[in-house]
Image (cartoon, rainbow, N blue to C red; front, side, top):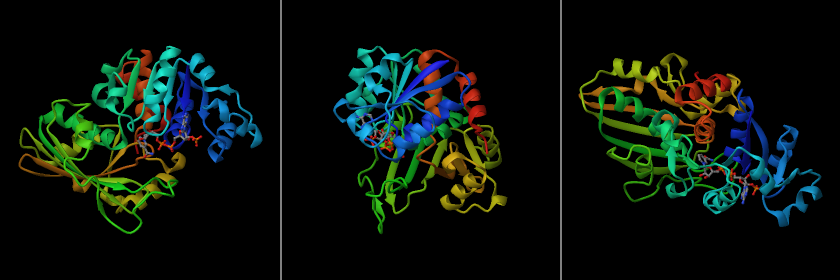
Length: 337
Ligand SMILES: NC(=O)c1ccc[n+]([C@@H]2O[C@H](COP(=O)([O-])OP(=O)(O)OC[C@H]3O[C@@H](n4cnc5c(N)ncnc54)[C@H](OP(=O)(O)O)[C@@H]3O)[C@@H](O)[C@H]2O)c1
């Protein structure tokens, strides 16, 4: 069993830990945090050995009545691979630690691309991460865009992608984020950073992105226009996208009119934390005008990168190829609504 360390046990880290635990070929060696809080307490309740990420603050855990298993250095030393899920910028600072113990490391999308040898999306470029020492799992938005672009490129060729990203102001737990009563062009300059980030996966893709932030916490929404290299009809595109396990085409009959009902659906379906690992594409929004394809998709920012992290673990350790890994991940988590 592959031993996986998770450094940074917040929104992404705790989900990755639970997903790793579900896999048949890997287990959670431990998780690291800087301080005790509700997430530290639940880590212990779930049976994850808890490590102190900052030695000088280790006493705080005992003071809060939480037993730690050691320091993060010990965890990194013993692990076969470490998933860094610390806040943006901290991963780059931690790189030295992973190099010191010669432990392959995954970073998250909040890090600059140059932190890693390769930026990763399982559907698009799994093989580029095989045996790499440092891999960056791209952001929630880049993951969502890449999953749609990959099959379209293969089937029809893509001339140009234009995407408007209506982004949630913050995650539900991020009480200090906003806006709370506004609609912000964010960033106000075009293109937003998302297009160049998609180019870390598809270097030759012509893509422009625009970003906004709105008073919402549940999900992002993408309005997508892809100019294909050939005429297609919408039925054909629907069939193509329906075949992708990490794309969920929301049937009209479900009467899901937005992110709120999508999350409610996920909770009703028994999804942990109401997570939606798949892109959620409104089926009737998939429309074509000549070579232009249009669609709306909801992206659950807290969870779509989770299966990607699991696949990246297999890529860097050479545990499985793309097809075997994604199938194993999907089966273990129950992906495919
Ligand atoms: N949330 C999203 O929507 C989302 C989506 C995709 C990608 N990402 C990316 O994923 C990464 C993590 O984001 P997140 O949303 O999970 O952040 P988060 O909820 O703030 O979690 C980060 C965790 O890292 C811990 N931490 C802070 N400093 C640390 C250190 N020096 N060593 C070890 N742990 C440390 C924090 O624990 P303490 O409380 O103990 O300080 C916290 O539990 C970022 O790169 C982000 O851009 C986030």
